[in-house]
Length: 454
Image (cartoon, rainbow, N blue to C red):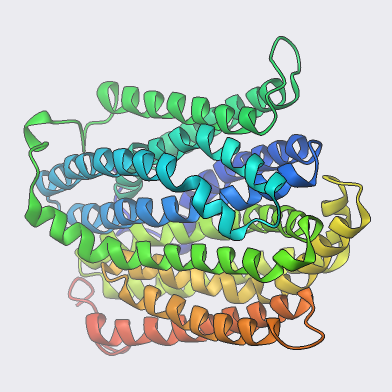
């Protein structure tokens, strides 16, 4: 366990975000390697995998319920020096993780084909998406125990074990991807099936590695079967914090699904360009997401310890660092976005769609960084409803306007990106104002010193 209530806030954020970012960089490399080999299979494969991958937002929504609630409750318990409560929450999160994993497998194999039929542009894309999902679903289910363990460690201030496991898992995935997708070496060329299988094998190994760490090395929170009997009072607290955060991520799923629907009339090339651009965008977001991941436990421990001055300082430094990172990548996207897309495909139409998407959408990268930072702070404070509210505002701005434009003469794909820029900018403003409101309600006036400082 690491005490996050002492020392420089900026240094703590950087020290926690750096290993997380390192792990995410490896994750980015895997995404790019995976995308490279899938792109070689053709537009139908890229569009199908991209469309099937939108279900990741559903999984991320559900894992957010676990991850956010674990970080909030455990970090606040650590701040109060209550190890018993921290252990109880950790073990209950494992029980919830097992239940979610079973539900995802059943629902996924039952509904995957019907879902993909609604958002893909042709039968070829749908067929490839279904094959990919059937082999990718175990990876999705295993995300729940992985999230429960990694988030609990992060809540206690430990990010390196999770980062090391993530890096090793990603390296394994990068090795398996060319073997199983393209048939390199002794492996069969399984196409999109190999992409899903490589991910499932890698995440399974990652779960085994983190399990071993908890059994052999972790002392502050640990597996205790006596605490596995369902405690619905703990579940109620977890869902009260986690459900709004999950709904926030689910709204991202609605957004990306809506984009695929909005642009489906432009053909598989347009969806392939958006799929590639979207993957690159997700990779670009990882450093600033690492900062946001660090803010949650820092704010949580200091809130639990009633160090309110440090909670405010955490938000200021987090937003500043995120804005700097996003400003740099915005410049990069304005400069060389076509080269990034061109690395994965040689088709001019796909490159055009993907590069223009990145150039335009990068205009709200700084706003997106503010949204991530505010979400991290809401998690640490144990109230994620404001983050969900700001996401609702984004959808309410984006969907009606985008749907209206779709049915107007002269509708172009770039209009979708312009509406997206507007919606994220509005969301950033709303997120920041809601965070200031949360500070006034929970921390008192800006000039009120914390009890510890007093």
